[in-house]
Image 1 (spheres, rainbow, N blue to C red):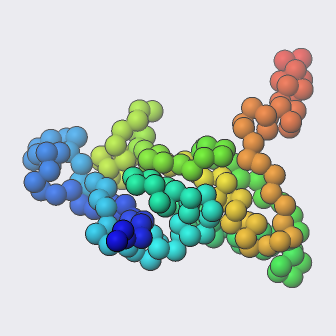
Image 2 (image 1 turned 90 degrees about the vertical axis):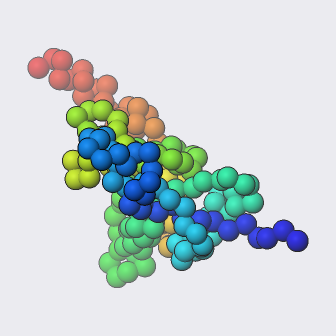
Length: 176
């Protein structure tokens, strides 16, 4: 009998003292590393079930998804406020960041230091940490939160800037 596939959460853990990268005195040694949870966690049981896109990957061995519970919570709250689910709701939300337009981000956690890509675990406190946004996941969260909200996008940066009049603005700036 085959077991039902279960998602496992990747966790940030202290680097094992026995790891090759844990050499004493090595400036590039990482204090932390990613490790797979030994059992399902609340996040790994609940979050992937919120999206048909995530569910479709569950049965594929080795599948990885990146989920941001806080991002989805913000998108849900924006949708409730904008749609009028809360008293006096109206407005719009413009969410700008990096990430794929239609696919689920995978292994996008990265570190940036002095304009160079580095391990996000090197030099804690001195490395900027970044990860791609799952824009479709945010859209799904907003639509789940309110049937009265509309979602437009995601849109590629170039398309967005053209629609907002960047060419006209550049022409105007060149004249001055």
